[in-house]
Length: 609
Image (cartoon, rainbow, N blue to C red):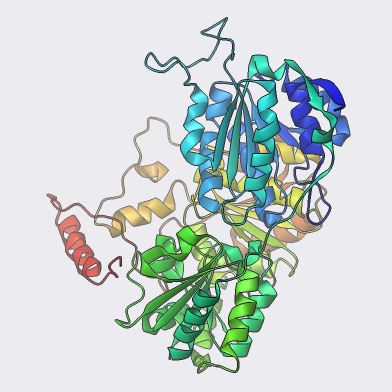
C-alpha cells in the first residue's frame, strides 16, 4: 500500500477537496474560518497551503459565517455544503445556534471546531471547560444534540472513518443535517502515513428511494376515496428537485396545493392550483380548503406547528393524513398513513398508481378573492402614515424581476412574506423559519449570493434582527458579493410586541420606546451600514423606497435601504390560531379574557393519534 505522510489537518483538507457530488461539483467547495489558538497552527496551515484547491473565506462572526454556509446549502438544494472552523471555546460555542438552525431545517454543514489537547499534557488550556465528573467533556459537547453526527478526533487515523461518515450524512436525503468533528488541537498537527487511496476522488450521489409497494397501494386508495384532498408542499419538494413533478401531479389529478415556508415557490404563485400559504401565516384560500379537507397529503414537510395551526387547522372530523416523506420519522407523524420515498419518485409512482383519478377542482373564486386582498394590503398607503410591512413588501415585489430571491428569517416579516409574496419561480423565496433565528438574514443573504451569483438577493430584515447580527454585511463588501438589504425600522421587536398584546399583556420590553432606558435609542442605521462599506440610504415612504430599489439594483456593491415602518400594523386577513400558552391565573382582566379564548381554541385541536 502506497502512503503519504501528512498532518491530520492536511489530510482533512485534501480529502474534502477531492469529494464530488453526483453532478461533478465539489461536494464541499471550501471553508469558512475564524482562527484562534485551537485551529490556527493546525487547520490554518493546512488551509493556507491548499490555496484555491480548497478556498478559505474569513468571516466576522462565527455564528454569522456558519449561517452563510447553511444558506449556501439551502440555496443549492442540499447538493453542496460548506465547512466552518473555529477555535476552541467561545468561537466554537458561538456556532451552536447555527448548528441548531441547520439541524431543525435538515441542512448540511460541516462544523470543525478546535478542541482540547488529546494528550491532556497542558490541561487545562486556555478556554477549556473542565467537568469534574467527566474528563472527556469539552465545550464542543454542546454540539451533540444539534448534530446529525458528532465525533471527536483524538487520533489522526480516526479521520479515515469519520470523514466518509460525514459525507454520507450530507448526501443522505433522510438523515441530512449538520456534522460536527471536534478536532483536538494537538491531533491537528500530528503526522500520519495515509493511504493514497484515501485522497482519490470520491463521488457521493443522493439516492432516490422508491416507495414500498403496499404503502403505495394504500396511499393511492386513500386519495381515490377522498372528496376534498389537499396537498401541502414542503421543503422536501425543492431538495428532491420535484417542483415539476409536483406541478404535473397536481394538474393531472386536480388536487390543490398549499405551501409551507420552506415549500413556497415550489409552484408558481399564479398557477390556478396554488392556493397559497398554509397555516398560521397562511392565505385564506388555502386555509379554507384545509379546514374542509378529508385528506391532507403532506409532501416533504415535517408538519411544524405554523403549518398545522398547532394542529387546529384540519377541522373536518373525517380528515386523514397521508405523509409522503423520505424520512420515516416524518412520514409517521400524527398517526399518518405513511409513504416513505423520495419526493420526486414518490409523486411519479403515486401518479401512476392513481391512473386517471381526478379530484373536483377548487372554486377559483377562493384564490381570486385572496389575491385581491394581497393587492389591497400591499399597495402604497395614503397620506403620510408610516407604511406597514405589507406595503414595504409590495414595493419590493414591484421593484424586482422574476429571477430575484427574497430572503428573511425572524420577526413579523416571515409571516407577511409567506402570505403576500408572489413567488414566480422555484428558489425565489428563501426563508429560514424552522428555527426562526434572528440574525440569519444578512449572513444568509451572503451565503445565498455565493450559491446564486447570477440572481439578485434581496434581504428583508427588521431593526431588531439587524442589531443582533450585521457584521457579515462587511464580509459581503469584502468578497464583492453584492446583496440588497431592505431594513425595516419599527423601533424594536414589533412582532413579539403584537403577540404580547394579543395574549392579553401590556406592551413591555419589546419596543424601544417602552423598554427601560436612560437615554432614548437613536440609531443611524444608514450610517452604520455605510461604515461597513455598503452603499446606504434612508428613504421616506414607499415612493422613496421604490426609487431606491432601482438604484440598489444598479449598485456595484451591497446596498442598504432603511425605511421606518409601523410597529403595530399587520395583515389581519388570512392566518390561523397559533398555540401560545396564556397565563391560567392573572390579576389583569385582559389576560383572563385571552385565557378564556385560548381554552376555546385548544378544545378544537386535533388530538395526536
